[in-house]
Length: 211
Image (cartoon, rainbow, N blue to C red):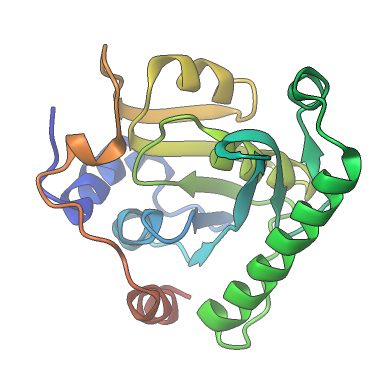
């Protein structure tokens, strides 16, 4: 299965989430930047407000793609203790990297929301959306942070996800909505015919429309 672009993927995802349409407590959150156009279609179809949820992984020294922890817009950093101990990473490094990532999240939040406060998720039915999931470290961090903020129900939705990642995220969310779980998975972009980078200005304009 491949999707023409993120817009088509969002519309197909909205179709499987249609049972949530009309809920007054519904909130759609996107992982920026790629998740924003997908989530915008879901929010539009379900009649729900749209916002973003920020999360960054903390990469290992000399191997930034290997996650040893994560940070989100709210809450304390999450540390993968087993990975930190296995690689003998100093906790001073973890704290420093977490501070750098949190500062970047704060900057992007101000830019994307243009002064609007972050949404209150307490007691809400929250759908967190990305355009695809490979390792799942960012989605995992975001779901952990959202759970601490007390949503009534937490749903993770994405057009495509790696099988082992899907199993991990199932423990983080109350419900998963995934359109395609391929037997082989190299990168999210291989499942889209068009997979251009989403620009900051596109995110700002989409959020302003969906707020």
